[in-house]
Amino acid sequence: MSKFLIADDHPLFREALKGALQNAFSDLTVFESDNFKSTLEILDKEDDLDILLLDLHMPGNDDLYGLIRIREDHPDLPIAVISGSEELSVVSKVMGYGALGFIPKSSSSVEIAAAINEILEGESWLPESMKDKVNQLSGNEVEVAAQVASLTPQQYKVLSYLHEGLLNKQIAYELNISEATIKAHITAIFRKLGVYNRTQAVLIASKLQLESPVEG
Image 1: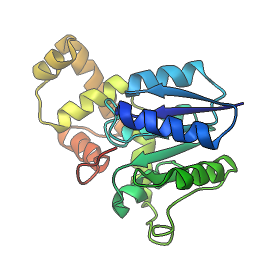
Image 2: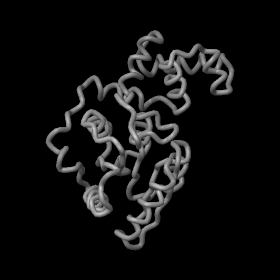
Image 3: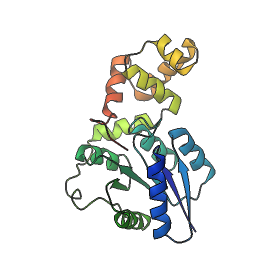
């Protein structure tokens, strides 16, 4: 029996993809999640999943953090990003940060099934139009991913708010925790990222933002 997890916050897309997969794969169990937290909960509970089909902009994912965090915690789980974007800069980052495949949401059910089959065989998969155009990440970008992988989801939330320019007391209000706790998180963030001030931390956070809005 195969076990797939669809992590996407659009219920209609999940339903359509689930139906297509169940038609293409026999004896298939499909799990669903609609945010980063519930995705982690399923991953922790179901340790024999065959593949994760991940939406980049699902709530809590914060663009690339979700992919990096899951890749760090579940290194043996194949991940395919299914996205509404087909920008090569996005695809390059996704593949560089550990996905085995990048499947546009515009793909047909036959193409999606073929992509998943190839990934399950241990191969990476990209649309033909992208195969020779994806750029390798620089050493600095790989180092950033390793640093960010050390942050907890709560610490990354704090970093994201720093990136938005919020003050400590504003972040504390948004997360409903004390300002002292925020200060402790910021100290840990600086240590893990190897930086000494907010500006340096924000620059690192900027490197994980996708350059334009993406559906999925």
